[in-house]
Length: 387
Image 1 (cartoon, rainbow, N blue to C red):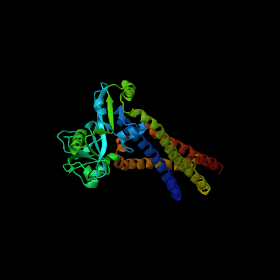
Image 2 (image 1 turned 180 degrees about the vertical axis):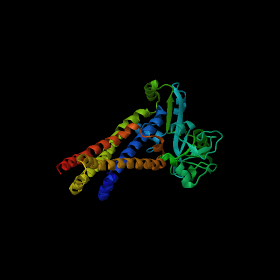
Image 3 (image 1 turned 60 degrees about the vertical axis):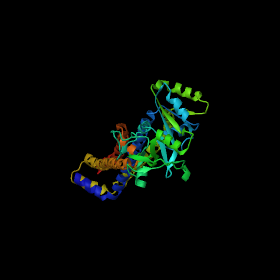
Image 4 (image 1 turned 120 degrees about the vertical axis):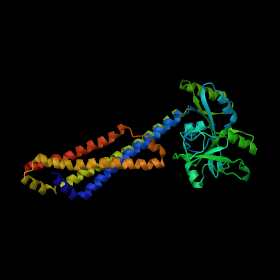
């Protein structure tokens, strides 16, 4: 039977390969989309869980969250340093971290903050200089960590020095003369942070004063509370506390709002991929139906040598089932190779495994394919009984 099936498939190899390839691609696309969606959600949850509140100048809350945690969009307006000093005294706060992004180096953003901010964004460093085992701990106030793309572009290495300037289109008078020593290169994140330089906020403040800038400013402040039960109470208290207008946002809530639209978009892509899979199964069905007339003579010969109707029906069923199984397996292989490639491009993709429930799509496609294959098999059974 296997020899007959192999020869039968060989006669229709062109159409079979096209059907298998189309189904394999749809399976790979389904799994890749699910994987990217799950990776993005997991990364967003992890990062947003590290900061309970973000305080900044009046702006769109979503914009403040996206820039603060993921560096998406332009930087928010500045707020006075005194706001941070006041927030440090907040009894409900476990820690408070200021962030300033108004300096640059060769047009690339320089971020002044603390080690806590790098921990919040889950940044790691390679090839770093340090006295401890933590690669993202500043050695001193004039240390700097640089993004992977920036290091590659300018061939920067740990131990070298660089200077920064005020603003993003600075003139010679805007450049600070105090050099910062590159302590390490940050592991690639796939975000704009790969083109950033991170320096200690205290070192940045002293450098500004040395350069003659008297006004101290930051762009936003991250707050982690001791108890999340006080989250809304602290938010309302901070909104009404200051004379200057401030935006106080809860990142988890803002990301949840975005998550609704993100899930809709993901479902659209998933549906499109599933439709491609169904069309591939239909292609297999029509290939079998088109070849049914060609196989009548073949069936008559097999009946003459003693083949029974159920054997012929089983042969007709086995061919498409094998194609479907091979296509599903090939799709999983393509998916695995794709995630390896995407993991180098978008590191967060390689940080998770696809949940088992996402394999439901594979089972559903197999069941649909099996039902599709049963139709020509039943037709073959009826035809062979009449011969």
